Length: 452
Length: 174
Image 1: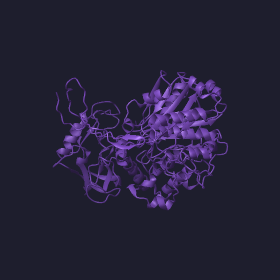
Image 2: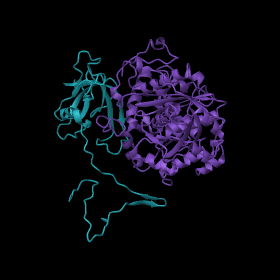
Image 3: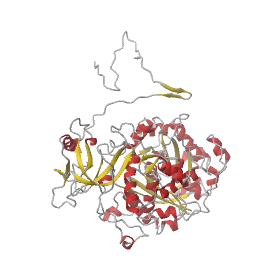
Image 4: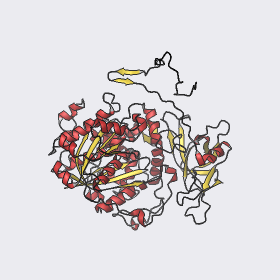
């Protein structure tokens, strides 16, 4: 769609407030044969029920559930159709109704949106959203082929069978248009791997330098192995509730104030030029000297659309000023810079400044991906969008250290807390944002969370 | 009773003497603690290109076919490549037209670590092709030469031993 009509840009609003009350997750590993998929799901849910200082017992919490949402990207990977039913059974939730949600890499975000819609509409009052991906039954090259099955099989997949190449085409064009040095991209990989070192859940807590990223072999130029996200196995879970139920469960729920979805063509090739959809912190003047087409290969219209809707729904005027914490879908270093622009952290063409200025760091104006993100901690696809909001929930509850700093959390996953561990609890975060993203930008959700 | 030898399809066997027997094949083990078994895949999908088949027939005949909306009221009358059977702007039926076989490289990336089923040799430079009068930027590959943004290129067709996939189209520098 290159021309919007009146109904297309309606601002989505929840019919009643939606809260996030608890979160849980497993650790994330390249291979996890020690545990079957349902075990991972049950462990994430148990952690949410048992370790979130809730006012209700796990049994009482189970008694409040009246709908479930399951989040798994690819039936191919787990090699089990209707895996949702197996998970639901393992959790003992039958005969409560449930749905599975699938929107590629944004499956986690879309699942939270589906759960939020259930609560906001009054259909349900307490909804666990449970996500996972079992990516370890096949080798890496076969896994890349499965992921590339989420490109157009007629016109794209045969061209490489690897998603990194489809992003690399966008990356090459972006770097051509805006002359961003690869060293800037490397800063993002180093930042997120460094933060992953403080997460007991992380798959790849690598001690790396910018030099290491620049010297890393290319998968598809200009993207090297260290510019690309992980392929992970693991699970994550959130509980959503309406206001009355939320305060029965915890004194410290976080409000999911707004959440919205956007989309764009699966094939990057099919993206026609259009007028920039402006965010509240932009005016036509912002782009009066713009030399390049939009959204072209340099921008994600889906992310811009989701941000436009969510910001207008939540009244966000200036994201860098108003957000205290952000989780982006850093599948590739370059797509992170593109996303900074799509969600208005910087105008188009100036995304690099968000990382180069220091804004994106723990010490900066808007700490981003303190979780370690997809580059350093995990991309267990169906779990990813849920993992992001889990980390934001704990940050906003001031409980990040409980889940990351305690030696017993590290021991649970057979790890030792490293000497360079840092406490990454943000000081009193009040508003957070999470971006979940699929394809080369086929689906994106933006969630805005507020402390209450 | 079928004696098919399709990949991944075991022939049907009749029980004898009222006893059910196994065929002797096993799920191979990777390890026994925990038990990890191997489930090979190899079924054949019979995938139809449907209304887009003319495009792939065209490649085998050395032609680059796109589609356009012939309706004078259509908001976008440029050629679509990849083609579309129906116009996404209006849901009207498109018409087939021959697209220009010269263009420019809009962007590129050389694949060095392809996924498992990749048929071409590496390094393989993927390209997105900008063509005059075409509203899309077709993904393809450069079968000769080193790609650069803005480079003028022309289409070449693999008509001798077509793969019946998008790989039958590639480009070379003009």
